[in-house]
Image 1 (tube, helix red, strand yellow):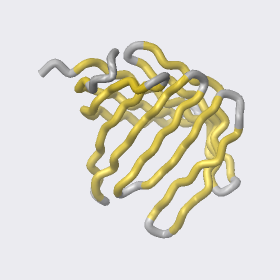
Image 2 (cartoon, rainbow, N blue to C red):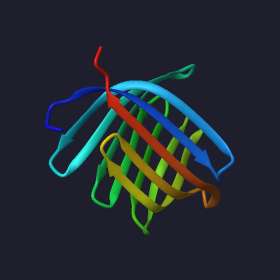
Image 3 (cartoon, one colour):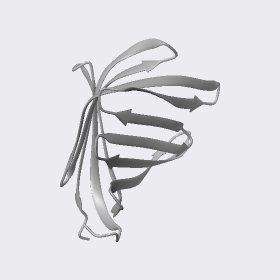
Image 4 (cartoon, rainbow, N blue to C red):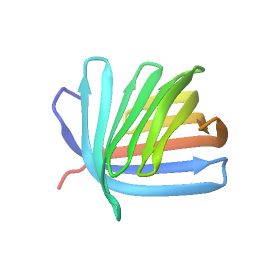
Length: 135
C-alpha cells in the first residue's frame, strides 16, 4: 500500500475475557506513512461522533479516539503503558499490557490486559479486519 489513502470497509471485533463480544462495521480510510500503518474511521453514537485512528508500527500500536469519547490507548509488546479514557464525568487512567500485536494485510490483531483506575478490567482481544471498499 502506498502513501495514498484508500477507502476501506472495517470490521472491529472486541472480545473481553473470551466472554463478551462487541462488533462494529464502519467505513474508513487506510494509509501508510513511514514505517507506520494507519486506519481512520468514524462512529456515530447517541452522544455524538467519535473519530478513531489506529496506528501500528513494528511492535507498537496506538488507538486514539476523539469527539464524544476521548481515549488514548498505547500498546507496546510486553510493556505496561499508561493511557487515558475521558468521559463527561472525569478522566480515567488506563494501563495496557500488550500480549500480542500483529499486523498483516487486512488484519490488525491486538491482545492485551486492560486496567482502568488501577482495577483490572480484563483481557481484551481486538481484531480489526479491513478490505478495500470498491464502490
